[in-house]
Length: 301
Image 1 (cartoon, helix red, strand yellow):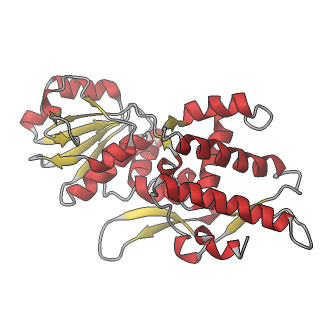
Image 2 (cartoon, rainbow, N blue to C red):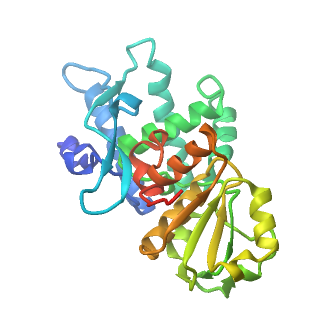
Image 3 (cartoon, rainbow, N blue to C red):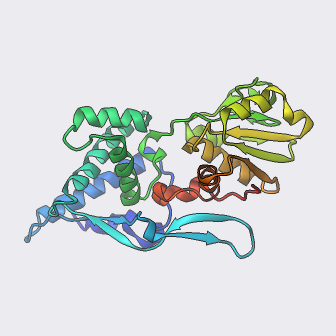
């Protein structure tokens, strides 16, 4: 079998802070290496069940980075580790969930398919009902696998569920499709795709002066229906409440594509509204190693 552990590149220091976007064959290779390492420990002269080293995703391990030269901030995780062990009663099921999740994702990647987190929950509920009984367990295990393999959830074949919309002075060029003019999409705006790969490839053009992030869908509809972007050259975007991943990712992309454009937040002045702004701006600790991919924008609330 050789020194398999030397090939486990996803356990190295250089991959500690970020989850990479990888091709399906690369993710499958990392899963295969994890399995071979596990089997190697079992077949050694002193057999043992190896623990799974994870980045600690607890709030005590989070940090907020503030650049000295820019206004850009984001959440990241420091270098504290935790482990999932089959021999500890309180983490044995979590240990097995990680392997079940990798098995499911491996099959999805072989089929070259994409699934949402909700679809994944139902698949795991059917195939492994003793270990997956809630969506929360699925969501947390996804982040454990992201931490173990050092790859993004999209690389695992998991697609974001989107409920967001965008309207205003923005042209979106989807590869091999017609250009979408978001100013002509009506009061409902243009529905943001949950396919992060597609959002990554979008070519965006605008003559707007502002981006306005709106908490309430009803307010978004009214402003889009009144075409406020013709009076105030702007782009309107909403996640219809607490921000979903696809909307956060698109806003992150827009902040990178138009770095000089101010971003304003139109939310309720209460803890929930502030939480929405902070999630858009910094990302969330619940996203683990992927947090930087969904935050890192400068708000003018």
